[in-house]
Image (cartoon, rainbow, N blue to C red; front, side, top):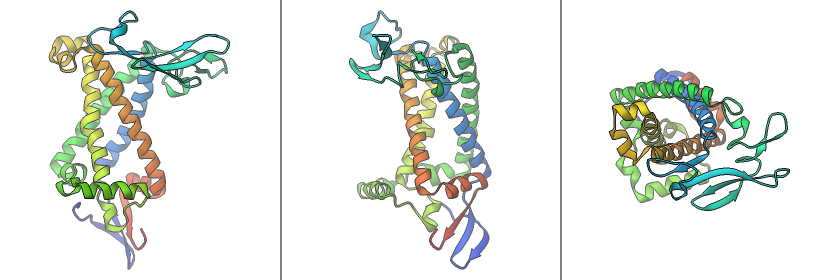
Length: 284
């Protein structure tokens, strides 16, 4: 359990307001949210310049044996079909991947629709500039979050799962409670349960460091300075593939996180992450 949160002000005999999130936790949370969304959207724009993924050190349209993911479009061009092909299996994705509607209402042959990318429409140069800038934002912001978590003890107290939470019975109970949408109330709301801890630890300590390291590997300058980066992933194209997979995992977490916030009480949850305060007690 988390250490007892300080009481800020009594509301009624059976409820109280507590400080749930430190100001640095809130600041890094919102900076992370902004940076991740912009990185995802600019990353999709960059991917659209060569919408194929390979394993190994080199990749081109002629190296089909190393290709494992590709997007594109097929005729007839008056009614084209958009598709994504993964490990040799092709899926129709017309309207979203490969073929979508441009802001002007015309057919657009792009990997992802304009509304999902920054800038809207193809602009590799600008997308790369934004992507690199916000990559530094997430690196510096992540370091601040990690150092605070280490020195305050929050990393061990709230993020990493405790041994007793990793038992089969405890894991199953938490899965069932989430499936029933039974969210923690009262004092229990002051500490994350095992699924939340695993998700937060996976994103902050595994997926985000992975996208940072693979992103560095795709830089020729960094490859020259740190050749071990290329060897770590088995080649620049493998690093690009892992980068895309880790990015997809972060996008999936972000979507699930937003859904659970809405289902568990968006005003209370978002309010706590803005003000730091949470009301507990009674039926809260």
